[in-house]
Amino acid sequence: MRIMISADMEGATGVTWTDDVVPGTGPFERFRKLFTGDVNACVAGLADGGATGILVNEAHSAQRNLLLEELDTRARMLTGKHKPLAMMQGIDSGVDGVVFLGYHAGAGCDGVLAHTYLENSITGVWLDGTPASEGRLNAALAAEYGVPVLVVTGDDETCADAADYAPRAEQVVVKESVSRYAAICTPPAVAYQEITAAATRAMDGAGSLSPVVSAHHIDIEFDASHLAQAAAVVPTVELTGVRTVGFDAPTMTAAMKAFKVVTAIASGAIEGKYG
Image (cartoon, rainbow, N blue to C red; front, side, top):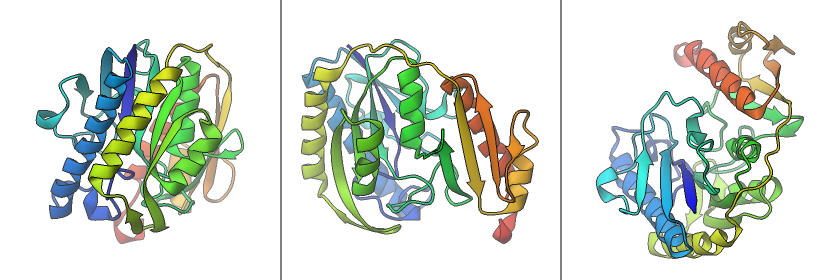
């Protein structure tokens, strides 16, 4: 059994604040160790449950946050940017399950550091009319390759979201959201035990599913009109309102690649303090 871990950082144990996840700050050096601890706890559980190959895809920001020198030796790590499927690179390699580790709630929702791809310039994303977090988008991509979502870890808002898009997945709440920048956190030693146990149980659900391939529509709302205008230069992307764009795609793979282009162009259009 080969399993992939898509590892984001905002939902990692103890993380509650911007500097916790931004390289170059004091808190970041502390929390990247806790982030690595979450990953290792998951690797241990997956291996205990029968996984024979584990790929950890670094999925946060510059995607160079996990400490390779401290990674459980039963796993390998895919690190660095410019991956065609971004957070889900490797989902098309024949894996038997995927873990969404350290995930967070979507843009416009309650939850610690909630966002969808762009930290604060996207205020809402909808997949086929349903509000979409990164988890929902990535679960739809996994379904296209017949890969079940086995475990989701993050705050309570993240896990409530996952209960809808991946109802069979194990959930581990490592913190309870109080606000965007505050949470009641589980001590790392306890969180690690819970992640390991959940990953072990989840291996009972590993294995190929029938691929679900279909066309999709994505809508994106920005916090400023010029970002929508910038995104609308992408072929197939249309302005649907002053701050909104939408596009259709024949598959979820195509949709996510288009979404990646849209967010990259919008990010490049952000100027100074005024966004």
